[in-house]
Image (cartoon, rainbow over all chains, first blue to last red; front, side):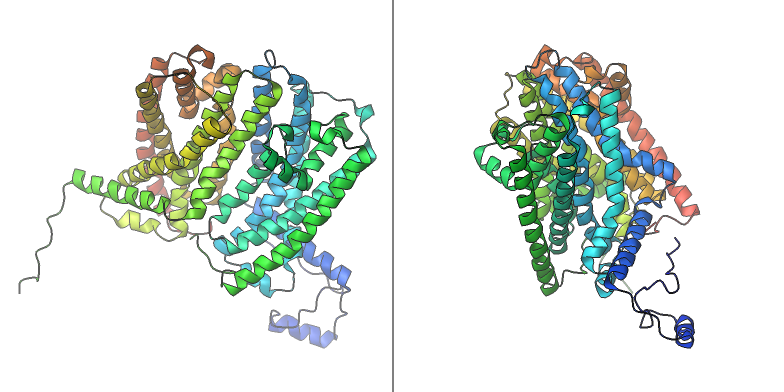
Length: 319
Length: 280
């Protein structure tokens, strides 16, 4: 692996401290003090470095082609499972036309599976496998910037998977929708809001992984499965028990999937949510995203404090 | 000078390997009940996906037999996950924790250790599968007609033998490879769910399903168990007796393959110095 080199004069964080080698420190002293970066530039540099590192960790075990195949195998298999389930009952089911909405939401659930779960995995990998979590905390990168940066490769994977799932549905399975009826502005707004919720909830999942031992591996995956069930990705939330329906409505992802269906296909899936107008739907999505984001940041810090207090921040339990 | 005590006589090869199997199984059985977080995650989370698929059938207005198919598929999915991560990837965990070399200096057969892992894994997963059964047949209210329990147990045992023998063969990959084999295991999860028809009748896959059934025993095992539970409504691929015979054959073939692969990859990894190499 080759580390990205900071360009001279690019305004990076001053590196004349402990981490700098004597030769490079000497060179800098001879050439005079460097200009301090503005907070924005430094943030972008740290983010970029974390993103680059994420790409290397995720992908450097294979050539790009193999990596792409590996990346899309799982989501395409899940989509195929849904497709064959649908085709197996298409002749005898009474509400088969509802399937398109479930299929589309399943495609967008890739962001939850990849980014949200991926952030929990970052903590597990760094602490348990590479034993480098303590160094990340000791570095100036900032944990949120680091997690955010590491998740960019997962965002790219999720986008690729989502597009492939939709393309497969369109071309192979004949699942069609009217592109002319797609309402792009609210769709884009909903997408961004949902993505924000995914990233911030990912922080909470990462925080949870800090206090959990090796079982964090299963918990990470379980969160995605739990949201798959709770937010009505492949069925309307009306089928859930009332208690779970109330919980589902409090989560932004439920509104997200409903908004994506409504603005992309022209109709949602849930009778419960059908009573909300479009502005109300977006407002509910925005409100639940804001609340969840605030809770997630607060929750991460609370869990991190607990992990520090209990000495779990760098306590490897797996190997 | 006489030693303070007489050393115990060395056991014969069969007794030694049975003891090794018992010891490795004991660790897994006892360990499976010690970590509440693992129990919860292993038991609850696979059941969530199963519940989603059952509710999808319900949302589409499918006949109730499809819900039974999905429940059984969800329960059997936990075994495949255990085969992948508890058998296939186990030697990776052992390598990372520095224990793999102990297996190689022990005087017993590696297959005896893997057999212990397999039996312990089946026990552990069965304790977890109880939760899936409770969710499927209790919480979701899925129902089956009276069935032949003995036949179901027989089919289950043969399916487990074939599945875990495949797991032993997969485990040998980790003697040589690291992350590559890890990613292979990761990539095998959902595609095998699909090719095995875990959530729909395998017959719906046509020729592809028949081909996959000949390679991965999960599909045939699930199909045979569905036929025991649902009869003709299961839309089985082949008669139960034929499927049991194929599964028995696959169990033998995978066991022989596992033995050969272990020997070959052990030699190769020793030659390349990768047997105890961590973080590869």
